[in-house]
Image 1 (cartoon, rainbow, N blue to C red):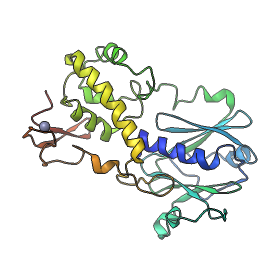
Image 2: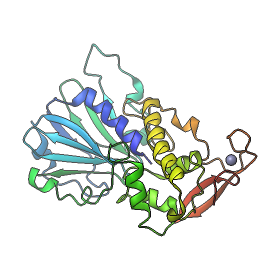
Image 3: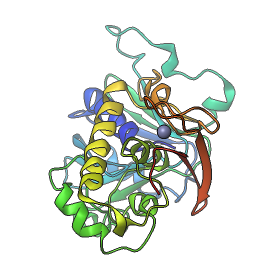
Image 4: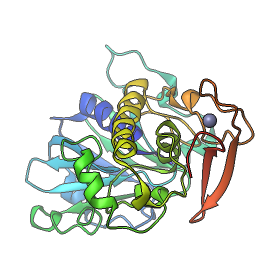
Length: 289
Ligand SMILES: [Zn+2]
C-alpha cells in the first residue's frame, strides 16, 4: 500500500511534468474505482490548467485554474504513470509503459497534456479520483478529520505528549490513527517503534519524555529518509517514473519475523503479533513493554 513517502514522491514527480500544464483531454476506461468517477469529470477538467499539486496525508490534491480541485487517492495498488513518448527531446523509458497485459488492462484513466500523458493504473481499484467545486472542497469528508502532518512544524514532542496522554491504548494503534497523525501506515509505524525501542503494545500513557522525543525524532527521520531514497516498492508500488524505490531494503523489522535484531549488542529476535488485525513486528529484547 502506498504510504506517505510514496505519495509525496508521486507528487514531486507530477509537479515536474504537469504543474502549470493544461489538461487537453481525459479518457476514462473504467469509472468503477472505490467510488464511481462522476459522469461530469471530463467536462469539469478539460481545458483547465493544473496550477498546483499539493498533498495532505495520502491524498494528492490538484488545484485547477478555475479554483476547483480534484483528489487522487492511490488506495492499495494505485499508481500514476507518466508517459512522455510525445516529447521527442526526452528518451522514452519503457518502464513508463507496463507492457504486460495485466497492467495495461488496469489503466483506468488517462489525462492528456501537451508534452506527456498521465495514466491512473490500479489493479485492485481501491483508489479513487474525485472532483470538488472550490466551495465544497473544504468540507471533503476525506480531508476534514485528518490529524497533524508528521513533517510539519506542528508535530512536536509537546504536541504528541499532550495528545497521547488522552488515550488509553497501545501506542501502535494511536500512531495508526489518521485523526491523530496522518499518513503513517503500518510499515513505518513498525519501523519507528523499533528505532525508538518501544513495544507496539505499550500503553501510550506509560511513555516517558525521552521515549516521546525519540518517537517524534524517528518519525520525521524515517519519512525524510524514505522520500529521499525514492519511496518503498513493497507490493504494488513504483514511483511515478517507473523506477523502484530502495527504502524496503532498509526495513529493520517489517516482515522480518524470525530474523536477528539488527541493533548492536542486542541478541533479540524479531517477533510478529497481530494487533487490530494488522501485523506488528518487534524485537523481543530491545523494545520495552
Ligand atoms: Zn533488539
